[in-house]
Length: 130
Image (cartoon, rainbow, N blue to C red; front, side):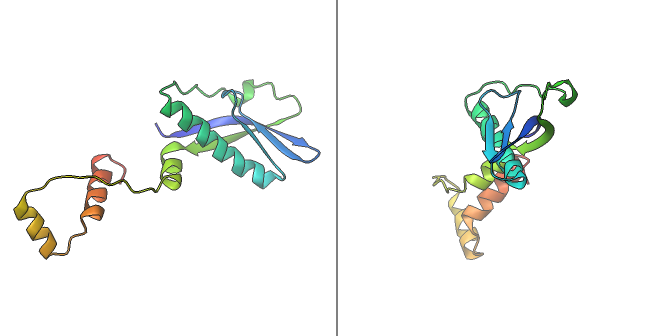
């Protein structure tokens, strides 16, 4: 599953806002204003979840926001889609060497087929990401 929603504690400070995710130790951020804090919260949540995925660690189950002891902080929900975040940040092309029958290569070249685009489209469909 690539979509996640976690409760965040949003606390107003003299010089801005702090955001902490109680379910994810070490997952926090800050910003000068509220819109910036919410944007930064989405980014840091996605990055923390991606790190867990990459390290093959379990993704913690989100707590019930009503059960959190927020103190003076405001509880807000933040959503992150790790697949979309990866797509947005990692657009680096990777060279792949592959083999196809010669007759297929000739037919595709005659029709001006863009091999890279065709492979990407086929992979998206195969991976059910299209």
